[in-house]
Every structure is written in structure tokens, then in C-alpha cells.
Length: 222
Image (cartoon, rainbow, N blue to C red; front, side):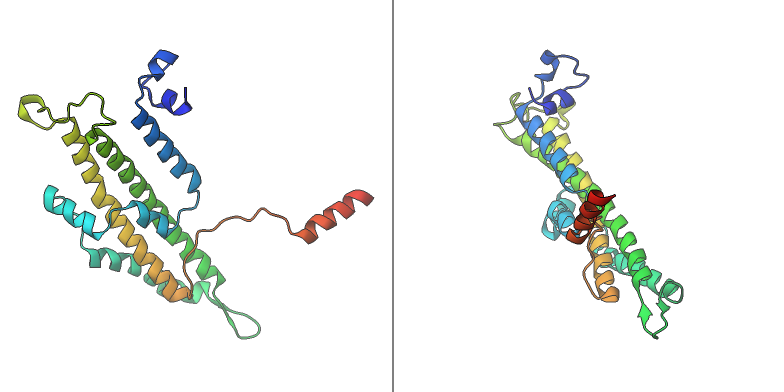
């Protein structure tokens, strides 16, 4: 019995309860868990891979009537967020050293942290959307839906279980899309101002060969 099955089963306290988790539910759990663990520092590419693209969001807006925001306005908001910070803080964070050269390191770090926050927010929304999209897909898939009640009418002829799952997934799409576009605008502005693509900060805990040799030498003598 997998850990996923145990976690998914509502209030599972024993083996019998854990077995109620379907293979599809276990797969979704494992995929979501792996995405969360693997992406400690998400990138823009990770966001765009999970968020709905322009064609997908256009279809969702057309068929469900949800508001997804204006692309140009969302992109502009992301661009302005970084550009405005740069303009406001340039005289504070960009310093001139003794050689007369301007040092942008503090500005780079500040803007990088802002972009990082936007990326993480967008990734969270995109990851949630993708999880709900998979749930809706599995509900509709006859091979993973053992109850086969997706063709049955809901109460009083309303939405059935599949309809509700699809609608809920569709509701998450505009959120993921809007935040993804804003994050993309922020990344574009960062590249424009700093001169290189934004990358998530990853702490390097590895010691250099020289440091390792020095530590070994000191340990041998001291």
C-alpha cells in the first residue's frame, strides 16, 4: 500500500480505509507531490508549462464565460511593477564605487526577489489548476472512473459529478493564466533592465576543491 493511498483516503486510520483511494487519485497525488518537491525554485518555464496557454484560456472563456483579464493589461502590470521599482530606487540601490563604476548588485537582488515572489505565486496557481484539470480529466475518463456516472444527470437535472469537476477546473484557469502573464511581464522587464534573464536563486552549499583541501590539511595538523 502506497503512502499516497494512505494520505488520500479521508480520515484513513487503517488499511481498509486506505484502499478506497483509486489508482487515478493515487497517480494525481504522486504527480502533485513530485511537482511540489521537485520545484523548490520554480522558473517562468515551469509556470508556463502548467498554466493554460492563450488558446486554452480563450476556449474556456468562450464556453464558461469566466473573466480572464486583458493580456496587454496583465503583461503591462508585470512590466510596470519592475520598471517602477527600478525608477524609484535607482538613486538608492545603484551606487558608484571608488573607480567611478556603477554597481547594480543591490538593484539586481531586489528586483530578483520581486520577480521570484511573482513566479512563486503564479506557479502555485498553475499547479493548483493543473491538479484540478487532471481530476476533471480522470472523472471523464471511463477507464479511471469506476462508477461511470458521468453520463447521469445531477440532482433535479443539474450538473453531475463530471460537470462540477470540469467547471471547478475551468474556474482555476483564469487565475493561473492571469498570474502567469504578469510573471512573464516581470521577467521581461527584469531582462530589459538587468541585461540577463531572471533565474531563481539557488543557494550553493558545495565547497570548492580548495576549501576541501584546506579543511583536510587543517584537520590533519590541528
